Amino acid sequence: MNKSPAPKPTESELEILQVLWQYGPSTVRFVNDELSKKRDVGYTTTLKLLQLMLEKTLVFRDDESKTHIYRAAVREEETQGLLLDRFVESTFGGSAMKLVMQALGNRRTSQEELQQIRRLLNDIEIKNDTTPPSTNEAP
Image (cartoon, rainbow, N blue to C red; front, side, top):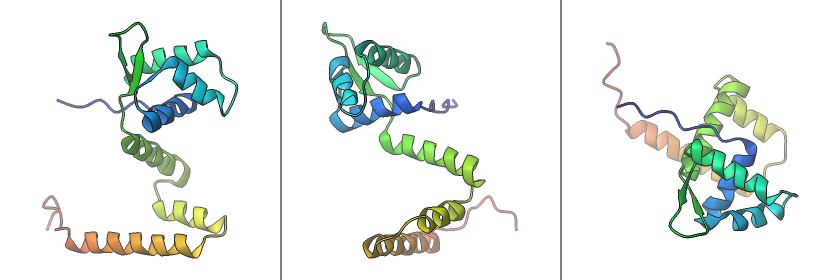
């Protein structure tokens, strides 16, 4: 059985998901209050967005009580990965190298950040060295 691809959230939907990932299951009022700390957003707008997100299976809704509680139906890491993959593909032609070069070339990088990048690269090299080759390759 094929799993359908996860829906890509809009920017507004992503803002709501950020609230749900940070605080967990929440009411429309709570989500709206959190969004309103950054920009002016109406309660009915937040409600409508959550209803649309429910239809898109981005959130779940608990209807047990009078006040509906919404929770994220998608994991933060998976959503970030999906959005990053699409961004790298559409913006950098799928090249992670171009993305990194652009990111590092456009701003000053601290020594701590460079050390973290070196550790990440070392971890990737170790992982690649210990991962057996794919059995699907032709001889």
